[in-house]
Image 1 (cartoon, rainbow, N blue to C red):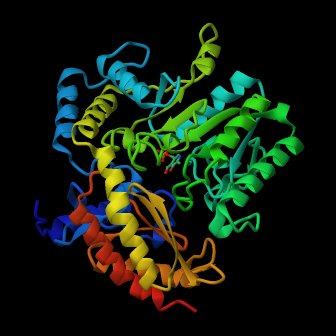
Image 2: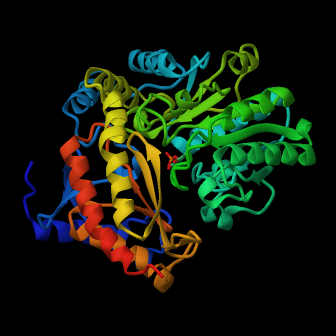
Image 3: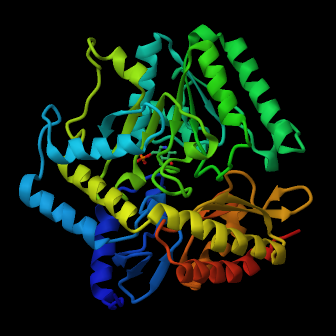
Length: 451
Ligand SMILES: Cc1ncc(COP(=O)(O)O)c(C=O)c1O
């Protein structure tokens, strides 16, 4: 579809937004949201006739792109048949979505508790772990994001937590492996893995294993920087959890449903956690949906004892119909296979080639359609292009980089000193190459800040 300019309509949308919409994570008076007129596949456009290649997939969730006709039709059909129904009943689209998800989760994670999004999934996973173990504490990693609600934001290991953290949530943070910025001064992946596991063991020993209900980790941390854990790390965490009776929760809200080139990222590491949280890609966010996939053992805890948690819209029929259609589309159109192929043959080699030519690129990390460029002032010291959590003038280099991407028709994902290449899982080879070309031009701007 070609964008059709209608600046007057755009101005009205913008005016009402500025008057009445209170935006997430923002100083309301300092933001200038783009008014979006439409979207299709990997592109969206504004009311001035500008079209952008979306290298963010929304917030890393439109895994099948925008307006997939089969999913739109499935939502319309479900709306005509049964637009909503309360969660205590067995409903066709809910049952079917749960079966399709359970068939794709690893191991015996065969029961699905539905939520409206990722944060609620994390809230409920932690509640299940606490009730299952009878223990209060949760361990989670620095450099992580788990959602904006009470428990999820406290589990989060980035500055978004600070304002909500009064130190009483029962969450203890530890360092997960990240060789490029190693907290353990490691020089190899195997050293980083061994030291990170020792550090986790030490943290558990000093917190008291009998006080710890769960370890919550993103399988591959997303917003915090797409750090693929070294071989053996997640298997090591699994073994530690088993030894101490701790519930192992893998948060796949961002990494799940095709993003890494497999249905769930856990498949890359051959680990089966006790709980998986999911959302986003489960139905490409066409209707809000998330959930927890639950192991047989934890599900059995609530066989005779009621689970003390629920949501009016748990397993909403429209959202579940969208999930059924999305999963079907992903199978029929080999979307997961496409994500793996694009990572191996286009994005991976293409981003590494950019790194060779642009001194601002410190490291390229990722797989599938889940890539990060770690931008630096100095390749030797790894000094980030902007300081951690920089704002205003201190963030000028990243702001200029982002503006250059947009000028070149690319909508970039920018977080701190990184840009993430996270297009839809069904992005075409030509679209991925178009994105690489726009990044190439924008990196020339970032290079100007190299020391
Ligand atoms: C790994 C992870 N967990 C949880 C969440 C929270 O999901 P939601 O925004 O749907 O509540 C996010 C959102 O980006 C995420 O990336």
